[in-house]
Image (spheres, rainbow, N blue to C red):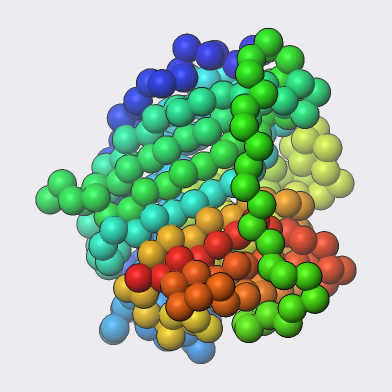
Amino acid sequence: MAINLDVIGKSFETPAFSYDPDTLILYALGIGAGVGELDFVYEKNLKAYPTFAVVPFLPALLSVFVPQANLNMYTVLHGEQKIILHKPIATSGTITTSLKCDSIYDKGDSGAIVNLSLESRDAGGDVVFENQAVIVDRSGGNFGGERGPKTEKIEPQEGKTPDVSVAQTTSKDQAALYRLSGDKNPLHIDPAFAKKGGFDTPILHGLCSFGIAGKAVLNEICDSDPDKLKSFSVRFMNVSYPGDTLKTEAWKVDDKKYIVRTINQDGTIILGNALAELN
């Protein structure tokens, strides 16, 4: 099944996404929040985690773009994700998202690299947030396309102690809970499907680890104030599994930027090339 290159440069309108406080709370629980982060799991003074911005992204990707582009779900992996926040995420509402395929690059035997940009607006027409995503179809390469530019490396100074270090041990049921926020890819729940994708067991959602890292950034750098975070971008370096301990580290570049990295209990880099920008 070859990738449909006709999607390059095209924009797609996606179904409206409606949510309420329970949706926000379920997402917060899915990334490991608990009663220690009460404003995110209790409707009394509820706030939305900024990384909730990825939740409307998934239906747009899976129900609209994947079939249009003929991506192979057995071999698709998430490469990179960036969110850009334009205004606070309301505790309920309806979001409409437009998706554009910016480019598809041919990495040969390593697959095809698909670059997407998404803009999400509220009922009043204001842009609330943007998503920029890189999707890798490991079976989609060798179609004769351009290899694309080299990406910028964002790494902490070697040997420098991180300014922030937060560890969170995920639950064995973390993926089963996180998938209720909309990412129903069987790769994260079905052992037989995971084996077909080349994994011994179902893996944790990349966007779950993204949320866990974003939560650490918000709590430790932004004083748990969502208005302080401007953007957050990561590269998914390696897969993690439910039950892993994920340690998020951050190095201050200046008052507005932190380089971020998340490693597992073995020291393997799960999220790298990551940057948090503050307002």
